[in-house]
Image 1 (cartoon, rainbow, N blue to C red):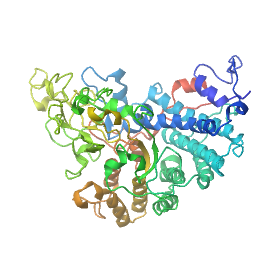
Image 2 (image 1 turned 45 degrees about the vertical axis):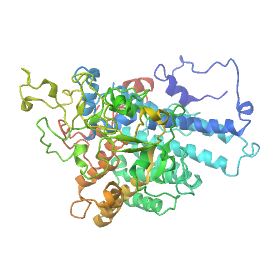
Image 3 (image 1 turned 90 degrees about the vertical axis):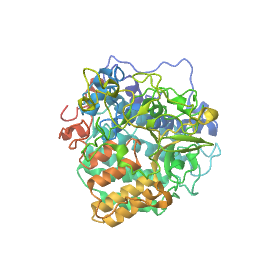
Image 4 (image 1 turned 180 degrees about the horizontal axis):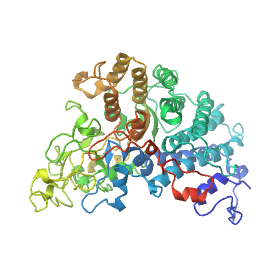
Length: 569
């Protein structure tokens, strides 16, 4: 009987330690399905192969903790307390101020979710290794592809663990005893070795624009390795930009498969984006079948936003997360170099429009901002539910109690506070980018957009930053501008990147605009030593480098006394 020690540990380790003699985690079987009786068809084998990817799909495409660990606490997003909504024990305020503690739920699930992915991938690999693929009529090379996709998937989970927490326990089998944490360098080396082993054996995307289905192609493995090298300085204290640049150039040159930048940004995130030539890795989604990214919709969107879309059914929304504001209550722009994402977009940028679904899968704009009356159907109005109950909601690039102006507490605009604790339902611009929605007439397309995880634009930007750091600002500007031009009519960018204006903050602004809301901002800030050293809005720098990593949740240490807490917690 197989003893899946890692899986048992992750599933029940909080309740007891595997190393304790009083804890029996051996399952009792009342019926039995073994590999010899189950893997008798290709469908059964594919089901086994896909199980870890099901977890991955949820982890990167629908999972709240991973996204919030990467976006809340940065200069991009916040989840402010809106009157009586979203206080939640001040948890989101603490995130905003980097007041991280070892009892935060997102910190716990941030660890257990990547660890579960590792366990499921190794478990699948061990089963697949023992299947006779030839006897089942598989094409030659299928087994090698499946096994190496599992290895690369393990590497992707461990890369997240390294990024969020530093060194983590490293497993190569489900048969292992519970382990303590490895060092940062050991974790880095483990991820590097897995990817180097897997990449040559991964399938290659031979056709430009071929349908993406979540499979892990050779370019995906190469991009993960480039990410590892690109962020090596904060991971292991060693710069590896030269190594990252070489991989990025090879990806752009087509060494790892056929990809191309899309000239229309809505194709990347839109309703038929499974054939977008820019996407290197994505999470499949289809309405009523593999629905993905509901978190993005439910957390960001005002309560009655479905009415802006003609009463779109099944579109619950919680009016929570929004962009860090650009303006103070009087309309004056904040002076900080970071934050205020909405104002960073040029007014001629075609993305900087209110989101409008135009029909037949076409839409424009990626922001929820201004008065929420649908310009194509003026009777479709998003009204307020709290301070502006029954009135057309006007979403502001500001945070303050505007509804209370004229009261004894706040007689004037100038008297209004603007903090993470003083928002109302209209506060903060929202983003629809990664989760566009149709109107009620086309409701069956609601969850059709896939979720891009890695796309070619990231490869261009990584290479650009590598060139910038090596002194080649001209080459860096050329790469960024190649991507930027699609956002302006006829490619006429009024504010292109130049040798003169490209510095740390312009580079961070470019990362922010291109990848807004894609779950990576914290990593970019840490790489530029800006996560704990910069101010934005009402967030004050802590200058505590220990906060570049999250704490290990107390329950995890309680379940495995071999785990050591990160410094400073």
